[in-house]
Amino acid sequence: MRSTRLVLLLATLLAPLAARADDTKPPAIGEVKASQKGGKVSIEAKITDETGVLSATCSHRKMGAAKFEDSPMVKNDYDDTFKVSFNGGADTEYFIQSTDLLGNGPSAYGSASKPMSLGGKATAVASNEPAQPAQPAQPTKPATPKEPATPKEPIAKNDPPPAPKEPRTPPPPKHGKTPKAESTPPSIQHRKPSVALLEGQEFKLRARIVAADGVKDAVLFVRPQGYTESAYKVKIPLVSTGGEAYEVTVPADVAHATIEYYLMALDNSGHKAGLGDPDNDHWFSISFKAAGGAGEQSLVISHNALSKVLPNKPIHIRAQATLPNSAELNEQEAADAETKMATATAKILYRAQDAGDQVMDMAGDMSGGLGGFSADLPAAEDGHPVYYQIVVCLADKCSIDTGSKHKWNGVTATNGDPVPTAAINAVSSKAPAGLPE
Image (tube, rainbow, N blue to C red; front, side, top):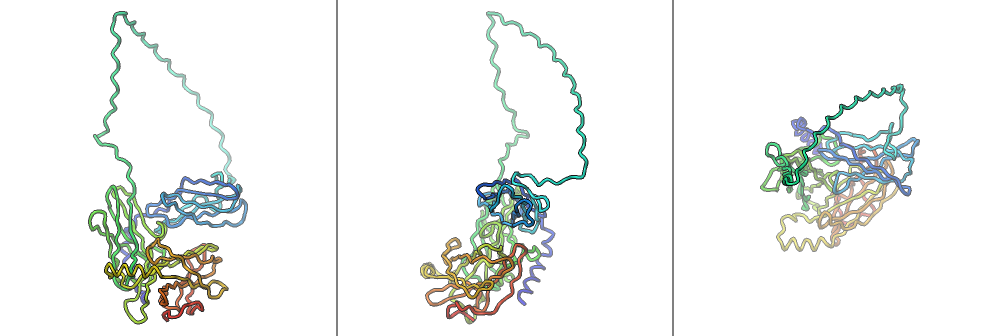
């Protein structure tokens, strides 16, 4: 019932916003470079989009093979260059496709019917058009002979030497304007909330936006976890609170289950910048806890739940655990909480295709702050589901991210669109005692 109300709310909010979408172009792909050395093929390309690039994929095969393999391209941290490396030789052919954050695309460099070779040229395709005969060269006109130069008068012996020429003064800029240096895109700084957020209550997000040409517009995109269609996306403007500080209030009706969000800014010169997590091609993720009630856990666990994973690739899971009401602690209580959280341990309980209950320790991951953990689950084959639960313990008290030992996160490996994973109701034989029902 709650999910239905959320989807209806988002659809209603987006109806007047659809007309405001100004980006309808797919990403631009250029500056493609391909090389081969030691049995490895490396391909890179500059891929840009005014909204931001969601994904870039390189499809490749040995020349003449029936099927292409897809390899995701990874963006550099410091520019718009996307790279990929895979096993292959000089007879490799490939093409690149990319889609932006608003779903525009895919744009392509090459295609399955006309892939590119490592030399940078598309495979030749025979043409049925007859070749056109070359046009005869037009005769050139003889140049008009120049008039002979007038001989200079000889300089008398006693005449003074000619005065040196004055140095040429460069002309002033037109209209008295100084040429303008090329500006850079805005920079967005933001940290995801580290405290537990209550379900069904509005909350604020804050950011710092630096723009040499001034900020024209700044917005927050919000969607339920797992939705990629623009029809389920809410767009909320950020408000300046002075200087480079901005904030946005997310309404209570959106604060349910797990949501994803993305920040974007536009300066007065038309430059756009986006910010996601862990990079600008992905979205931040927040999970909410139920307000009060029996069975409240000693820890609140949030993680970037997965909507899609690629086949035969390790499944990267990140999570963070916090103490309830940690935002209300005074300085001494916060210091005590930090000491306490340093002793926390985390595990993943998981089930894969044709395998029983499994357990894996998670390593500490401070990239998201205190109480952060991460681990890589084994790869799954195409079409195979993987179910998992994250359990974090302080001494003998353990908490679970799904809120119940009977509930599981699920994801299915696929190269295509995300595949819904059927829910299961079961308890892992590896689950520690004391987890909520």
